[in-house]
Image 1 (cartoon, rainbow over the protein chains, first blue to last red):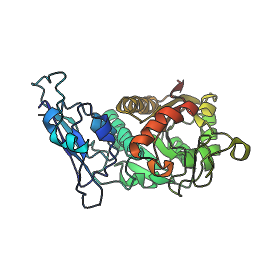
Image 2 (cartoon, helix red, strand yellow):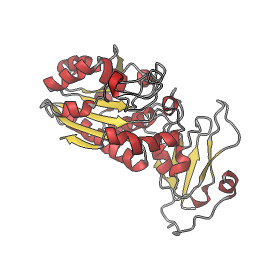
Image 3 (cartoon, chains in turn purple, brown):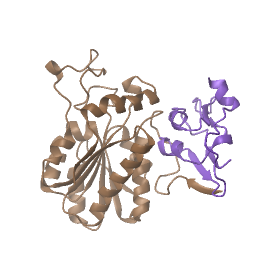
Length: 88
Length: 244
């Protein structure tokens, strides 16, 4: 895990823009709504590289991105996680 | 782990009232980041428009003024002339700048006022219920053009940036968008350049037009709205630096 994102799910409005821009398909829309009634984005950090694409496009600035500078991500290791399978 | 991205201090830590997928949130963040990077938070005064971004003063932690519909360039003129050391920017939508405030922005540019204008173009009147705006593209369905905008009855989309680029008083005019992370980075650069020009005391008006999505009144999902900007809206409003 070279990167990590933290989503403030209570503030997320579930627009889904981060889901589309994530190059590693790490983000999915949750099946459970938050207190405001939106279905927020949720993350499986397994393949996250900390590229911050999701944070750049997030209109509500609810994503924080962290990156481990010591780990170099292996190219092509975009194995699908359980959550992305669920979405498909 | 190193923090790569977090909320900038000038953007207040509170939820916005914008609809899911609205581009205003992105534009607010870019302005806040620019202000922090240039270190001008203490001497910046912003002007909020009438429109969806009317509550922008709740989200940006700088001095803000709310003015009458379409009049931010007029108020900014007075503010900049009486406080030349302050950095004055106005944040205006297409209803504010391209409809009721057309005279103000044209004359502010014509006089070469040293202000920065951030113009958010979403091709529709968002706050009032999705009616046709002057910037609505041909064929676009809105609340007041249910058959799509026709040239015979509603005329053509108004390209304000091209108009302003003709005036010698406007020193920098650029049109950007927020439809993907690469374009958002370009928009950030444009906004920063516009502010830098004012900070350096350049003689003239700087304007950045941002093509922004309105998923609710375009009747699309936020993702489709971003695609619509890329595929349709940029045909009418081509991206790029028009002047400066």
